[in-house]
Length: 513
Ligand code: NAP
Image (cartoon, rainbow, N blue to C red; front, top):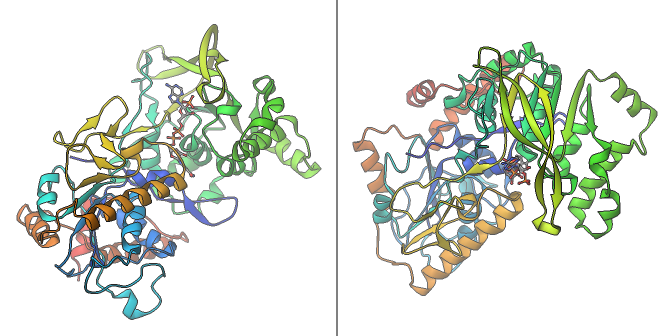
């Protein structure tokens, strides 16, 4: 069974607009797009919630048509995309863009947003939520029903550190913490220890910064967001005042990006603290590095040196009651237990030096050690894809599907895109080009006859199968009911929405007419 987390949008306190907490986390969602090259599109999802993402994506992306539950035309090859995070969507977008003559019937361009009712009601897209591929339906069954199946289900598991004490109470995974504040049903019962002044986040990617941002953002700003009510309540009582984000390499290898760091350095009532000696030689290296990293490094250097800070800025930093520490060149060695041996008490770090150059720079631990006393540790060292089914060739050492340019090894008509294809790295643009690449490959294979063009039953067979198994699927219209309830409940609380976190309640709302 695939059990993927869903990501959502968080309020960006710096600009007052919504933005994804974790753009690439979209890939973690479990949504299947089953769409028809005859320009019908259908979407399946494990979570009813995921449709929110789908809807927002569809409304936001100018090139993606809004999905509709359709009766879908039954002519032409049929394509099923499992996963409607960016990878699934960009793959779909690429295929929908085409005007290749193999499609017959309702051909229209997918390069404009829906502008009229007629366009909006085009039967080319539908959503089926609350479906688990691998459990409710197998890949084999999907392949029987569709000419092409695309695996774009992202990375659902965490990477672990493998250090002593990792299992102590108080050590949480980034995934569960992000799921908790986003109201993901399976993480809503998490009880992160916020009754402590110091939290440590291990890893220096954007997820780590998202977590630090949630822990340090003043409550009045979080209140304006759609963060779940229980997380808001817990964070209101939070005693956390210092968050250390720890990375094993140096500033030139930090995995976070400039936008996320800028939000931290400009956060009200929070002071970002770097260690000046971590930056030895960094200024000199600036000339030879690519522009995005150069700009990121300049932002860090500005914060380290205080260069160019206005008096107002200096005052803001001096008055701040919370601190965000970015610690480089430190590797976690062990989590130290409390006296009773149950809870964490501190994190022991090794001081590292760097070896090698360019992309192959590695951290080597020295004998020097440091200890940070803390009550909460969040492991944020990246995600990992898992095999969806034993029958699908999987490269366990890289955590990706075994494939050639997106074509799954030895499996005709089976493709992959996104993190499950290339690993959980890169920003949204990387996912976009990856999705496009797989989309183009599929089109080529359909056109050249590599993929069988025989008529397949498509969703008709799959929906019947799901219904026979007693799976309550969720359509886009169903989702709109959930959406309306969330918005209404949010309105009552002066928030953009109050997310539902109970699957049973969501499913009940879907059946209310
Ligand atoms: P990530 O970007 O891969 O960062 C993982 C971090 O963990 C790196 O600093 C890495 O250090 C460190 N790490 C890995 N193994 C470690 C170990 N054994 N010990 C210590 N440190 C270790 O992963 P992520 O933050 O989970 O993000 C995943 C993806 O989502 C990224 O592509 C990210 O850009 C994206 N994302 C984007 C946004 C956004 O656009 N707003 C938000 C969230 C996430 P090394 O570099 O030394 O390996």
